[in-house]
Length: 363
Picture 1 (cartoon, one colour):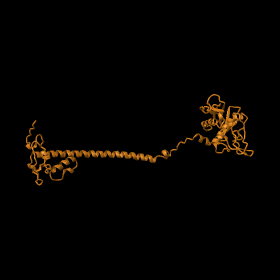
Picture 2: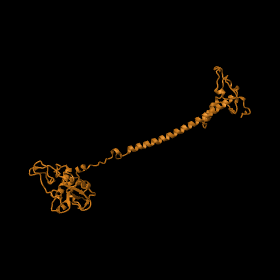
Picture 3: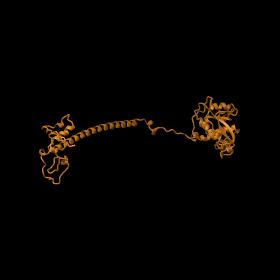
Picture 4: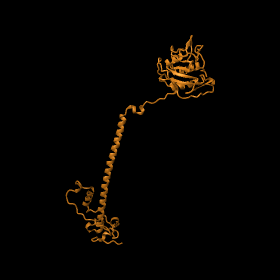
């Protein structure tokens, strides 16, 4: 559909092109762009309007133009153009030149708006970034302060480590207990069952621990089971096997008791343990009595060899329950028999015996 030129439109402006508004040059004096309240967009427009007479897009002589190509004067240059020829007077330019100036103003305005938006966005990003940075720095400072003010006890590297002792380590330790302690003569059975590991004659037993001793009853029960069923002990060559029970009637009860309570129960069988603070098998009762003071502190004959001394205590007193009496070594330097009273002595009649916890030590 052909376009009809608007009234007053020069024929060279092309169909449908808008007529740019003619703006008057700004009055002489200070530029308004530096006044308060002026927008960046208006400053850009005013700046370019001041130089509007110098149209950088004005065509040179010889430029091919055609009414059907309104942009030809902008994009097409002829080889015959003389670089020394001055530009044509703007007042004599056809209507297309005025159209070009309108497009120039439109491009300037768009650039100004884009610039203003970029400035606003950049400012907002900078503001937000500063806020995030400040918050991040504040959080970092708080975390550093918390670490610096934390007590040494809160540091993982300075926290005390829980050390779990092995069975052998526990058996080698001495434990505090008075040689004059008299307990309440009340006992607690150690819970649990330890099955007999062998096929020989089976003996059942229960482990009782007097209340208030402060000793490890579980360790004591474990020591009894391990010691009695060792091949160097009374289970030698499969002759016997021992089983710990918790309920029912056992063959005997191995009892860990204070020195005072031990003396009471040993006296029931006519035995005096007070002179040397020793243990006994109270044969008239069901109890084999292990003196808790000796269990905790040992004897001078064994010194610091607590593991071996505790094995000797168990084997010696259970040996009495099995029917064995006291004996001694016969030659100097020999191992003391397990049924020798090794808590009291290792030397007798000029013979020096060596400490020994086992009935069959060579096995």
